[in-house]
Length: 422
Image 1 (cartoon, one colour):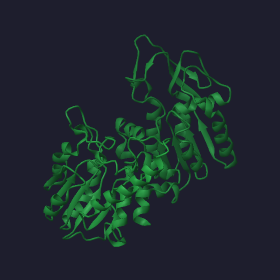
Image 2 (image 1 turned 90 degrees about the vertical axis):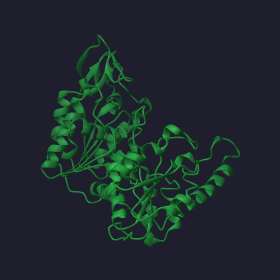
Image 3 (image 1 turned 120 degrees about the vertical axis):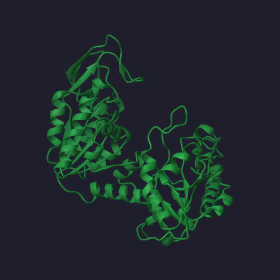
Image 4 (image 1 turned 60 degrees about the horizontal axis):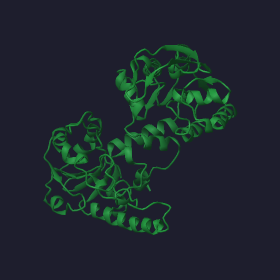
């Protein structure tokens, strides 16, 4: 069943969205992207003559009530964006009365799902090493099913539209689907777009296929890199992981970030790339600094900035961005691509002195997109780069999912998708 084909007239639909939006100290939304992303699905339900029961998590309350993470803070903003009345149920597991009172053409938002540990399905207050942990885990899984069954009881159908949590088998993202038949559970519009975007870069590939993997650590991206080495024509590795590769070849990297226990992994990546005929592209020079504050993303007073070869950085200097030769190399590699995946920045883009690498990558991706490439941007920092450099409308698709996108790219099955598609 697809949401486009489904008629919600006279039906109550419970919809898992991702309204884990950032709030300032006054509880005001600072970025409503996630709310706007869910609107097509919610508006379709209302326009059909149905009613929407909205459920989401916010933050990490760890199974306890935390007023600072209450979804009640954003009810007004959701009501304004949706354009219809939105009631609020202060307890997501005891919302039977509110759900029963809901009229067609209206919406109801449930309180933070993660106030209940059953949402994530993890035992609380017991260590994994404890002999009683397995029994506690089994009991929690049984409680999770009951929690999901309660949520399902509020509605006639279920819509999964939270790609950002699709990689978790939580009560509201996967387990709940067991309580609806195949004709009454479906992916929302946002989920359909996300799944299609991933399919475009992994299955429906137009070549040349160029992937850009940035970020600080090889370890956090190794699963993705290994999967991509069997699919891409070119793989650009940038950001902090550059220095692990440089060190693996005996290079001098100064004070730059490095994973000394992953030097063999870096060499294996190079070997696999060569065996698969993949052109592996690494930076050759770096913009370095003698005093960078990683807490405030700023250069300390009196600090120096200088460009070094990436494998010959002097002691006391941190590599913080791709140098001018690296930027040219990256842009040239992206030129002419027909499929592009970008995950992770090329440097500490939060600080203006070190934005040039990420900007060069972003502008090259935008140019290739203008020339006919399909470009998928994923991961919070890459998305932030696009926003900062005014490129959000110049790429094909920006994913709302961080961990979910990475696991999909690794080739893993996402529980939130599998629960609907089987």
